[in-house]
Image (tube, rainbow, N blue to C red; front, side, top):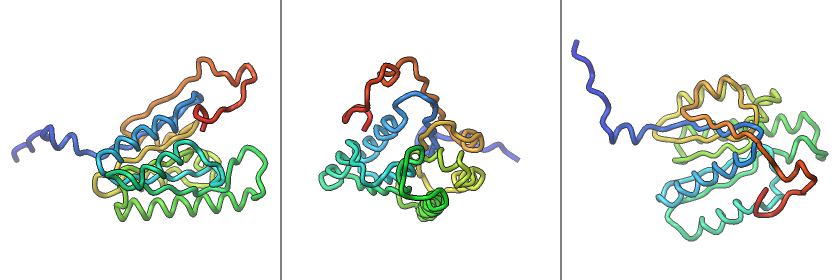
Length: 192
């Protein structure tokens, strides 16, 4: 039986990728938003799904993308799927946070199956997996089976090994120095 010809350059450029931005350093979400901006500028659909951040928190990237959504070639869907920061006080109990995270993941999984976006940003998604709210093996399977040419970027610390294994690109952000170490507080435009 003859060997299949190697893929062409064009075919190699159309392969969908899973990207992971993990580690203790700053810049995971910021890097993902850069990918979202590129995808939007090319006229493609972008879905940003935040799993831990509160919907009441008006981040700079969200404000920018809301403005861009009405002004440019691509389409942007922005959803907050969690119940707010889970490592500080929250009016929601752990069970409700876990339910919200799982509901959010199932919503994203259905969207992947339906090929709703060219790029999916699953922001802070490692946390629901490492806290046991969403099964990393289920996520890995959905990522492997996603149809079409959908790219997925997952952000957050301590990315589960199952996701690292399915990913095509993994970047580990390491903190060398951070102003928080000297007592500085978070700033608009830098942290959000």
